[in-house]
Every structure is written in structure tokens, then in C-alpha cells.
Length: 113
Length: 114
Image 1 (cartoon, rainbow over the protein chains, first blue to last red):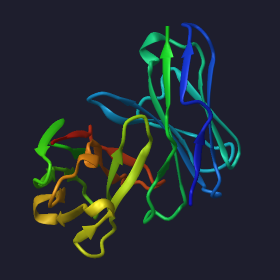
Image 2: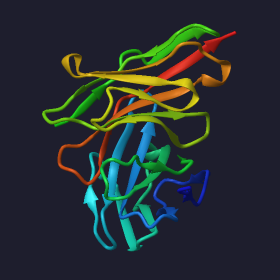
Image 3: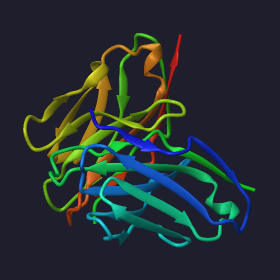
Image 4: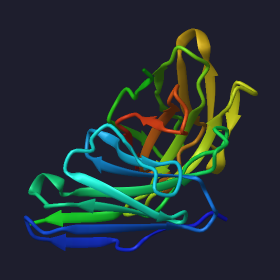
């Protein structure tokens, strides 16, 4: 069974801090994604990666960056956290076959004070 | 561009009643469609998927969905609601340009009344 693990379930940080959210998958999936989830807005794609060291902007990349140094790990970075980045963050991974669903981690609820 | 519309951000049903959660999509090419469920404080779990095979798709926990091309719909149903079905449900469609990106609807929160 595919396992997508996000390093923290809950995180509290202060405005201006640099924040790292980590995601690891154990199924050798090529593609990995970071979403944020907000009430009434559903899931919005921040960044995705289709290979090591490759990244593509999603719909709302502003204020974020990502890193994929190893195939199994995809990190989301908030360069200078702001209160409007308080949200639930979800990581997902998928193999190249578009017939297959994305597999999600349990999410990180991030609060920026 | 592809998009998904979920009608009704909140739906309430009585235990044992029919569950109907609506999803309409827009796509210029045959889509792949998914329903995900999210229980409190958890990530998203796949309920079912449509990938151009049978138009009536059966998923986990007694849910099913029917792909209707003429109506561009992929509504989720369950004949008899159970208390454990209370959750948030998301419909999603694949992006045309590949990379397995999904476009998600805004979600429907299902409440089951005892």
C-alpha cells in the first residue's frame, strides 16, 4: 500500500520565519504535489514535481518554493511566512500512469502567528 | 482548461436516506474523474474513479458514481447513508496537459442526521 508521510500534523510558526514542510513517499512515484486546502476553496495546487530537481508552478505559487533532491522526498518552503499562509497543506504522489489516482498524506495544519 | 463544480457546499441527510452529491465538469477531451473523501484531520482517500471504461463506477463503502457525458456530470450516490459517511467529499478531474495534475472542486461537507 502506498504511504505518503508528512513530517508534521500540526505546526505553529511566527510571521517572517522560514518554514519547511516535508513529504516522503515510499512507492517510487515520479510525480509529487503540494496543495493547500482552505474552507470553501477546495484544494489548490501550489507546486508539483515530475522528477528529481524538476519543479513546476501550480495555481498559487507566490510565497512558496519547493525542493526535490531525492525522488521520494518533496519539500515545501515558505520563505518568509505570513498570516495568510495559515492553512492545511496536503502532499500527494502519483505514478506516471494517468489512470491511477493520487495518493495523499494526512496533511499538515500550519498556523502562522 | 478543465474545471469542476460541486453544487452544494453542505448536504444533510438522515441516516438511511439516499446520498446524492453533485459534480459537473468541463473538459474538451475525455476526462478522468475521481471522488475523494476526507474524514476529520485526515488526508484525502480515493472513493472511486472513472477512466473511460464502464460509465457506472462502484467504489468503496457502498458509494457509486455515474459518468454522463451528455450532462457533463459525475454525481456520487449511496442508497443508504450511515453515520460514518459524515465527511467532506471532493470531485476531481485530470488536467488536459498531463502530468497527472488534478483540478478539485470546492468540496461538499456531508452531515448525517441520526
